[in-house]
Amino acid sequence: MPVGSPTSDRQHDRTMTLEAFADTIVPGEKRFPDDRAVAGASTGGGAVQAGAVELLETPATGLSDALDDYEQALNRHASTYADEHGLRLDDSVPPFVALPFADRTSLVQALTGKEHQERELWVLLALFANMAFDTAAHMHTADALAAGHPGLTAMGFMKPDEDGLWRFPDFSYGKQLADPHPDTTPSGSPA
Image 1 (cartoon, rainbow, N blue to C red):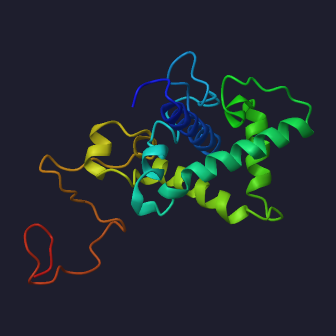
Image 2 (image 1 turned 60 degrees about the vertical axis):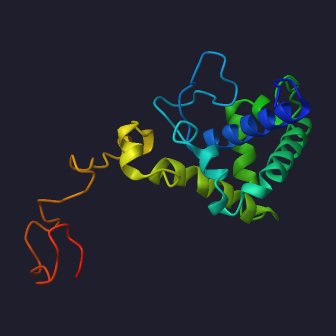
């Protein structure tokens, strides 16, 4: 699809809006100096760098077909918020992206608050932003670690052995609690 076409512009706006939402949930640093979606409210990678949009676009989330609706609703809420707070938004980017980070945060707090009638929808979207950062759910864990996934790296997630398998030579309680089943294979699988 050619750049500048209505479909590519629409996709770009949707991506920027979803990135700005994800960045509000788990902030990260700007990816480049003119990054508008990522506010740069934190150092290191956040939900955007962890692949929040890629995860949301995965059909297994059950949300991929609703992302256009999420984007449109979020931008409507951002426009209303801006009007109510006397903010003038830059119209070269989607309204939610144009909000300063503190205002993005206030709006997301309202959308996910107990009183908001759409709360469940926004909490669900926020959960996927967290999931991208905390688990790299859209990637194989070994691949995510090899790529330097910011969430798994920040949590100190242990890398697999050279063969791609995880082995844990130390017992979490400091002692072996039970003997392995006699039919356990060398790879750790039950027989």
